Length: 77
Length: 304
Image (cartoon, rainbow over all chains, first blue to last red; front, side, top):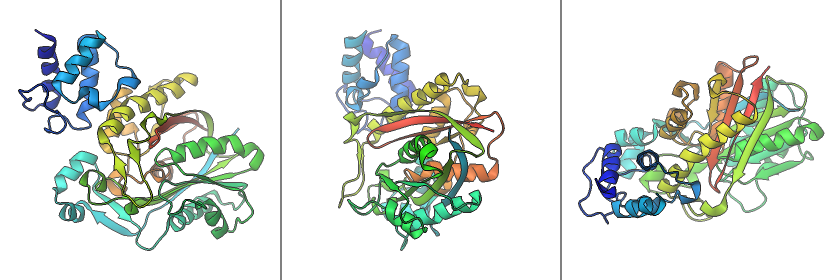
């Protein structure tokens, strides 16, 4: 599995909704993730990739699309 | 040393149901309940922030059976003027003109910071009356994501240097202005809330602050009798309990009836909890808050 595949699995597990095919599409504006699902996604990403997201990186913009999440994860593992 | 001697609260009479709000905002009643855990909230129609505060404070002093007050601290994020804040007016209305009255213009976490400040001041000032009062109905417009959350009310606590049902043992407070734009209320504009940022930060920072105060007092989370949190959103309260591996039932909640009354909510919750069950000897109680600023923290009191 690619990093994006694993991220899709994490986000899909939390969202329980179909994910956008375009990785650039906003997960917030499309209604895939609400404000309470986002902390769960971050927590699951930490487990899946054995990384620690510091408070200073808890900026929703870093996690508002599959592409941005992939960029964040690949930059921090 | 400082002790929690008594609590009081007041909410205005007008009940605003989810059905009323749903009709006005064009959303579903079930969506409001699921998104927030709130069934209804109270709106003050003619009463001011100072009126709400005075009613809660009088309730607190009646329960304490004293009129001896050496200092008044008032937190409010929704007071109507740049200055003066409501503290001096409230003190005067209660017959405490001349007693130092300090405004803490801080939403949500203001009552927590007020309690900590009172604990510091009580030994020199004498009993400190901490009041948190909010008229959040004046801060909302027709944005359904914020309008469903907020209500009006006030809470109070008398922090005494000599006696009370619990001793304030420790507090850990934090502020970080990096996020000052994420949640703000400016004069002449409705409240602005970036919900994604607020929830993402609160979900991490509140449990961290509670763990911090527990570690500093060598208290396991399982030993805490009750958690009294700022009543921001029931979904957030449940999330905090899960993060601490504590049963959600240990988190007192009355948000279903009053909504988010900002800084007043923690003391309204404390007042209701104290009237229902109250402190038990040797049992820790943890207060926690988070809000605009961001300001956040936790305080531990030990029942006597």
